[in-house]
Amino acid sequence: MHTQVPVIYATGSGGTTIDQDAYGGNPFATALIELSTVSTGNLTTFARQLRGLTRERSGNHQNPTWTSLPAGSKWSIAMPAVQRTERRVALVLIVSEYGTLNPPRLVGAANDERRISAMLAQNGFSVHQGVSNNRKSLVRALKDFSISTQTYDSAVIYSTGHGIELDNIIYLLPGDYPFAKGFPETTLKKRALSVKSIAQSCRATNFNLTFFAGCRTWANP
Image (cartoon, rainbow, N blue to C red):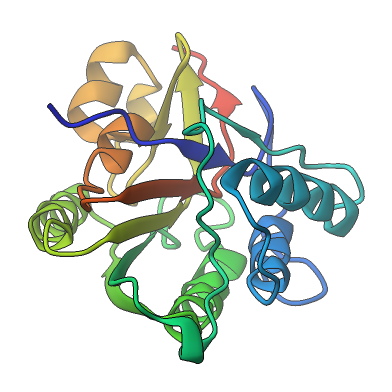
């Protein structure tokens, strides 16, 4: 049975994110890129350092949290070329275009697609792109990624866009989400993507991890 994939969120419960910092993207992405140059030893240390750097880069606006992390994991995102024996794959799943909203575009999210993809490639990941403004394309990208990850040692997803939290479930909103209908549970399940379902697309043999850099504001059904 496929075990639950840990998720590191850019915010605490009910939080919002900063779309653009001084580097042009989410402070969470900026902190992740900075941390990717340092071997952190284990996943718990990595998560704590990522939280501290994100707080600093966001002026304490963002306070990352995470689900249960695998005990004793020595995995690190940093991997110099001379040490690359692990087969790594990543999906950068970005929603930046929201035509019915104001503003209609998350410029920082679009910038982070390039920044995060480059960072992952530099650390030995085979990077897949999942940039789209409609749910159908996002689902297809996740399905294809889920199949491909099974031949790799480790898999990572970096996902961002507008996020909504309802009844302790966090959803990524595609660009074609029917915002005029609000955020009732039935519509979210049909027209959005839960972060849990996104994370479950990581199916590598040894290690799986998902980053959700979107906001997770409370839904108003």
